[in-house]
Image (tube, rainbow, N blue to C red; front, side, top):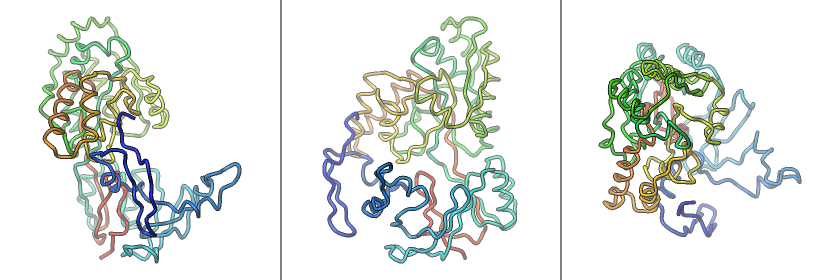
Length: 387
């Protein structure tokens, strides 16, 4: 796909070494992917012992079992409920903890309560609105890290008026940027100003001049010749406060321009399916690059056949630049120039309206030490300990 390198030969050198021979270089290749929690090597021969005629790859066995290669092994696994982990005696990096019990608690409010009570040592995916209060709780420490999880307003390029540059400019002027930061993220986010997220290599903030200005939005809307009473349905992830609250605020802002928004709540799977099928005209959505590099983000989002080019963006000059930058050396002046020009073009087209890039907020009991996490937010359990 688009010049992405592929492993034309995989060699198992010895018991601890696997060599991948790529057909061309890639800026965020092996080193970038090695940072991901999902990039583990599995014991294929052991897994295939459990294969059947109906399940030739042993996937059913893997639903409740695995062949561990990290610091821990699974002691017990109650699917959808809990998992108990113990140290792996064969691990190259021994774990500092003798046991980890992972509990599945679907409700964010309940996760906060049991953390406050001391029933758990560590909690993830807490509601952002709860973070200021947790900072005041004795025995709990909270840290916030700028992340690469960006939020945008996307619009289809397949039909009017969304593919009209004046309509898109109107949307850019109409966004309640400061209100989104205050109400939705409680200040735990950075304003975004590009078609790639903040906090990644290659991000440029110089090509987004838009602030909230409804007068300029009305001027652009008049040039777009949008019919009076124009309306659009925007899907939201039910239960995702960032998505729901952002869409509500945008609805209120666009109502002042005479644009009616109908909000349709659905599961995250339903919304993603509709966007993947390119059946959404306009929506708030998020994307976190697992490798913090603009070329990686471009590969997934901005090329003609990118899997998550949900909005059918097309600009041959920008896409040629993006495709070329994918395989160039990170940090090279030529690559930086291509990435910069790419963002200048796409932001000029208003390929997306950048809203904000959220923080990762981590809460734990004070005695938890050594917390670090992969770029895809999965904690590195082997480094954690209890004081």
